Length: 417
Image (cartoon, rainbow, N blue to C red):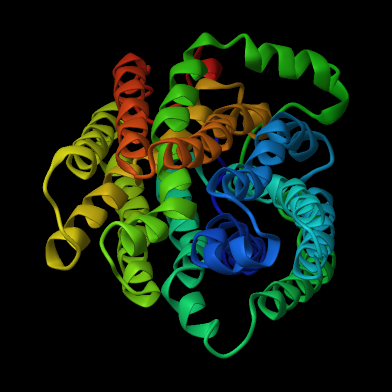
């Protein structure tokens, strides 16, 4: 892939559009993590068991995982602008439906709509990054994207716990739905899919749409790329477990097993998410500077495995030691950042959306399976130990997959063939 020099005005324009898209991505993370903090209210409102609560929270991940391949197709055919606008509108509807739910079934329907809507935002944003930024900066931009997106996770931990002392969870989700609708309108007005659409020269030499085969053939070509599948398994084992834990079960664990009040429990989750966010930016930039992907990924997954084993087997307690352990968990999970440049560099250059969506499906399939399974283990055993060992088992799988990943040296291997 050849890259043009940046045209005058390109930098300011792309960062303004990026700000709108990444704003929508902040809400993706908020929806992903918020059930962990409002778990008590949800159980009380819907008289739900731990397994039922896990199913409610995981409804988001079921549809998110199922939508990843369609999201990639939409990003590569519809373009970022239309894809993200449609996603924001559907997510706004889901948030309002969830906020007004009178039953567990209605709340689950709202979560499904939220998951369907936000599922296309990240892939659309990463497609935008692939088109509007030079490849040599892609790891850093991917890390910055995760850093900013995780502000939503952080807001869904400690700040949300404090906000719930002032307003109800229903009012919070209604406000978030209104915000999603506003972002949809701004995205339609200001975002453009390609530099050419804004009267600028292209950054990348990509085949014109008329010269490309049908999207189904392109998707089949991406799915046949065997080197992508170890990257998918890294996300499945590591991020599936991380999202399941910090997004729902970490706060109940700290409250019930360690006797913490919700703000103190949520503060541990905030530590994990803050380090995850900062680590995402750091590891992405480090990988770009080294010109290597695999060593950074393997090191991060190895740290995540050690943190999971410590959670399950070490005699840790909340406080300083607990915060350090949650920080290690978040830093290890930040290896997620490396999987997106790998997806872009292992797939055909024109199909970045589809390649990234295939990789991203691993995280949400893993979370959709682990979140309710963790809850079922809690119901069965009356404690959290078995669920923590589930996280460790996922981490072992992720490390084996990371060791099997192909090193790209920060260049597109499909284009180099």
